[in-house]
Image (cartoon, rainbow, N blue to C red; front, side, top):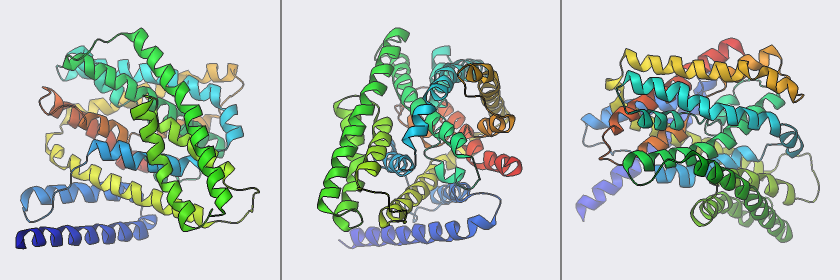
Length: 397
């Protein structure tokens, strides 16, 4: 009993320490060149290294189920509240162009050379390319909030992230099944499943968000405990319903649920900031803080495995992004969505990699032969996106 009490005390003390650390970093980060998410990642790496040498410190494990089932739905809902429906519809064609070109480019321009560099079977390299294809702007939304980005440009970044995340999960799952031996890799089947997953998620999210919004509005609890509690259940329940029951894209369902809820919860635009906005601003910041600290602890032991060859992956990443952004210019102009040169540079720098690539890599079985190598490769890409990209964006923007 005494041992249980001691463990319980250590966990509570560690939780208090984490909350103090998050508060301190969030307070002082605006005065530095790096955003809070970068400092939290570094703090997580430091804690992970310390915990590996100090048994008294509670260990922190980044559970992919928690990332995909709780943290990402909360972050997706927090970000989805701000997306304007009219502009989103107008940007649908350029967004899908970036998604449909970006996914295969990342798979082949990153995955195949990486397989050659690290002596991996080519199908395993393609799986790595699929994992890092997710630009994952949702989980780094607070990082982008630090910079003054035009609304239409931010919409392109967010829209690309939402839909490429859905394709990434389907593609990675199919490739993982093929390389582990549990299934076949059939491109036609994957294309059909991806289309079905995205197409089904949109009406599911819209219907669920509209129903909960109407209920909260009927109760008159838009900014009270009952209504706010329902908004917390909405993204998690929507994600589970979409992913587990309907086998559709949970992220897309949550984003469209946020859109529908935000429009159906009130009868008129008040023009005033509400408790609902502050509540979700807080949840989004807290969720991102926990996510990046935990991601840092997961990366800690991989730091010593990095060498110069992992820098070549970064070169491949930047090359594939540059070909996508600058090469798609004529196609975007054909759709009447020409981007100013400055926007193309910002879109190039905005291709951040965050929690989704790391979460997918951590889902690989422990007995998978190339698991450790792929983890190091993915973490190198994520670390570059969170630590170096903000410096480049600060210099340019």
